[in-house]
Length: 146
Image (cartoon, rainbow, N blue to C red; front, side, top):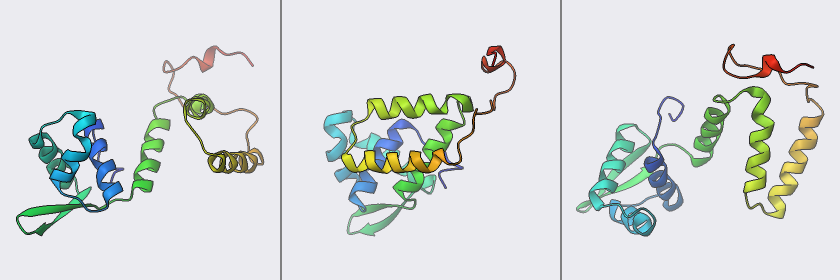
């Protein structure tokens, strides 16, 4: 679903709450995001409505309110987000992006162990050089002499 549907940064904030809560109301989303975002309740309701229209959330009635729940897993959404990011840069710069993410992120020992293992596995099939995937004029790879 997310592969065909773009969501805004504001919608991401709401989705993060819904994923964390699994089921929630608009009032709960408002309460959780209020301090960080300073949005009005109507803003939250609009964002929830948009996410429902995009079929990323569904609702079920509960008394006089609606319960919102996700129709897409957070893990799948994060994978799609990562893929979208990587399509926006020259394939030769993916390593730089990964480097920045690692440098700028707080990681647990477990995270680091998983990354080290993954890098060892990737090393077995690594290319001597990554081919550029840009059209002429999108990057400066053609200027680099090997």
